[in-house]
Image (cartoon, rainbow, N blue to C red; front, top):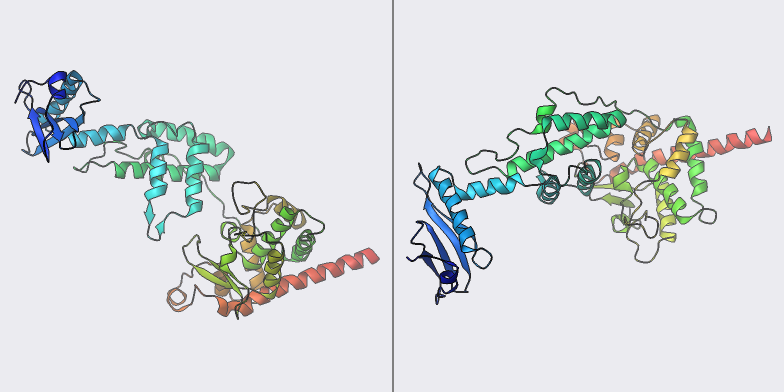
Length: 423
């Protein structure tokens, strides 16, 4: 034991192996640890008052800390021990206090696990958008600055222009605040940050925005005209390749009832055109159910048309425009606007799923079969446990029936147009 100083610390010998502790004579519990590799670190050691548990805490490397500063920090840690606090726990609390919303988000999308595994790419993208776009002014501030009052104010601001979006943003924020709390919890079970989730607290007095369930779908009498418009825009000689791809994507969604995020990201490796029962497989789905769906003859023709224009090494069936960051088409907004104009109502991509179900019912397809073809998992015990919900090739007759009905409506619409022109 000797009096430590900058010069004495610099001259401490390096042990041949292991480590050597040198304690300061003027401050009990404060010292320097020297390892065989030559690393020197200031340390503090003592017992937590009231528990008797001994703790050793590393203050920092000697080459970065002045002796006087290290001694000052050692006194702070010794006071914590005297007050019955664990310096390691207190360090975690200090670090947690500085966690920003962006840091929490990155940790969440990387490490969060559901019962089905990691978060889906679409969920990660949605959370990232909420933090970096909608709540951009909060992203680089500590989560401890998020209060009940700030949540209520921002929620009302967002609700004025987009009620549904406001709900989604604050559901995501609620999850991130819960994650920050739970990942920073102290060994004694206390929460060093956000002892109460401010979003949960806010919505004890504030109501979530009411969201009306959408029921729109393409009116069946107008489906023939919609299909003819799409067929026309799928002409490679008359339209730009991106317009053709968009038309094919919308046709694919009508004939399958697929979700836009799953249909637009379909890869060629998931398509089996040459099997005895041609099919395609969705490997990443909203409900995590890997599903193989049969191809009607109309869908086979559509995918063969995509094969004909496929560029070398192209991974996706519906590629995006050249030069864009996303390799596959996200949506077909312009084409959907044309569908909406013919339908006489504003339609979204998801409305094509309801259109598929409506066609199925019109054709006499049983509801449970139509739902399974759209990868809705059945709710009844019998269907849930005794029905094949992954390999749906046994439902080819139903898929073909729906596609034939669409083709027939297109022929009828053409006939009506011809009669009107003659008149």
